[in-house]
Image (cartoon, rainbow, N blue to C red; front, side):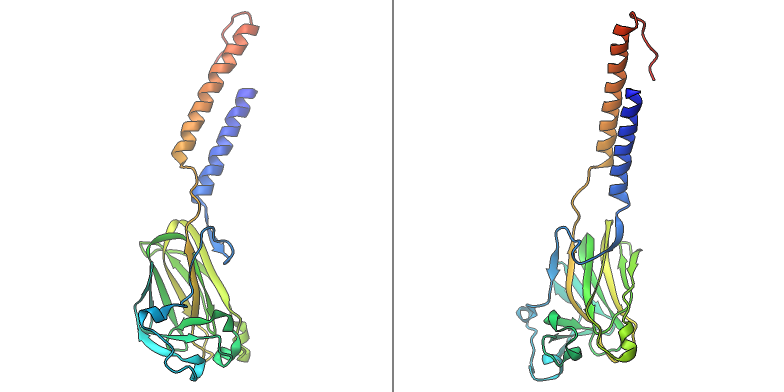
Length: 240
């Protein structure tokens, strides 16, 4: 019985390790990142971008060509342009996303998308969107779809600016690209801020678990016959 319980414990250990390693792919919240790196677009002036007219709509929007390269990120839009403005001004989007502060928009197209590409795959990624939104798609390095997060802006049918929403995903196989889309025709651009990414803590390799399993099984098979041989008059029991 003891040997059987050892086998069961080892099998359960290996199954848990395997599924923790492989089946870790799902939607996540902004608070679920283990080691987050956040790009909040607050320092684009260091790249020569700025708010040329602080009294214009959205506190100084200016159009700039893509790609925009920031650290590990390369960002493009469907129209080849993005604008940079300060959403902290109350006139921007009715003040609905003023908490964003400096952010980027997909120029002035009512519908469109942002593509955010990482220099190497990450296991957790996402970002905040406002004003407009739609499904957020996550792809691996081979451009295979890993998952989709659907963001709904139902308020837009009443022309009420929506609150910011976060779309995030985690997948240990690696996220290479995120596409943030705007599918709502509400005369509002897609605003992107606080792109967040990071990696999950490493888990034990499956090979390590199998080595541990082999060692525990060998120990169980050796110790149980030795104990029985002393109590059964020297008769060697069959190995399980």
